[in-house]
Amino acid sequence: MSSLLDQKVAGNVFSIQKYSVHDGPGIRTLVFLKGCPLRCKWCSNPESQLPNPELAYNRNKCLGLDKCVRCSEVCTAGAITEGEDGKIDIDRDICNDCLQCAEACPSQALIIYGEKTTVDAALRRVEEDEMFYARSGGGLSLSGGEPFMQPEYATALLREARRRYVDTAVETCGAAKYDDFKEALAYVNTLMYDVKSMNPEKHKEYTGLSNERILENLQRIRADYPNLPIRVRTPVIPGFNDTEADIKAVIDFLSDLPGRKVEYELLEYHRMGQPKYESTGREYPLPSDLKLDPEVFNRLKNQVEAYNG
Image (cartoon, rainbow, N blue to C red; front, top):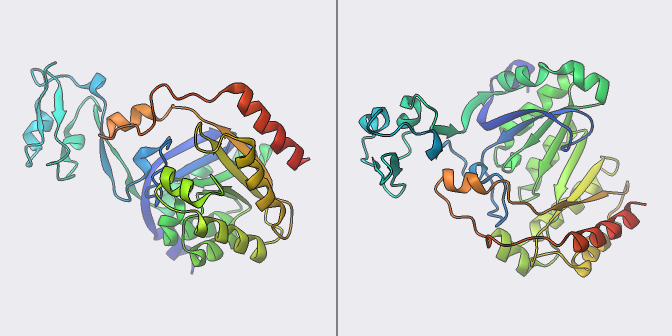
C-alpha cells in the first residue's frame, strides 16, 4: 500500500499518551486503540474494551441540572435524569450512544472515549517528540485494548511510522488472528506480549477466553520472526496466577520457544483503573479488598530474574 493511502486510513483511538518509559525502549508515545476480545477482571483500561466510541461521566465535574440543562435537552432517549444530589444520572440501559450530551457538556463531566483518527493525524502527534526518541531510543508504542482488533489501521500506522523512521513497539494480548499479526510484525521493532496464565480454564474464567490461540500465536510469531525482540509480560493477580508454579509454567513455555531468547517481566496488580469502571457504567469485577502480598511478588520476581539471567 502506498504511503498516501496508509496516511488516510482511520481507526478508533481513545488516547494518545506522551512521555511513557514503561512501554518499550526509551521515551515513547502511546497510541491506544479501541476494542479488545478479552474481559480481564483486573483490566485497567475498561474504556478500551468496546470497539466504538463510548460515553463516560465524571460526577464531580457536573454542574447540576439547576445550573445547566444542555445535556438533558439534547438527550432524545430520555436517559438523563436528575439524581438525589441535583447532578445528572444516566440510565445506560436506554442510552442510545448518540453522544450528543458529551458534545453539549460545558464542564467536561461527560466525555467520549474514542475518536476516528487518521494514521497521519496520529503520527503527527507522535512526531512532536522526535527529539526525545533520538536521544533515548524511543518512538511509537501501539496499545489498547487490543491493537489488532483494528488490523488494517494498526498495520497502516506501523508501516507509515517505519517509513518516517519512527521506532515501533506493540503491546498485545495475543488474542487475534495470526494473519493480522504476521503482516504487521514486519514493521515492528519490539513486541510486548501478554501471557497471563498457562491454565486454559483459569484463563477463561478470569479473561473470558481460553489461552490456546494466544500461546499458539506466540509460537508462530517466534518461528516466523526468530530475531524479533519480544518481552512477555504477566500481570500477577492474587488468586489467579500468583504462585511459583504459575510463573514456572510460563517460564517453561518461553524456554521452549525457538530463536532469540524471549524476555520476561511481571506486572504488579493495582487498582488504578477502577474509577474508569464507574465513569463508564461498569462494576469493578474483583473484590475491593484484594491485594497482592509484596513478599509473594518479590519471590516471583526472583524466579523471573533467574530466567532472564
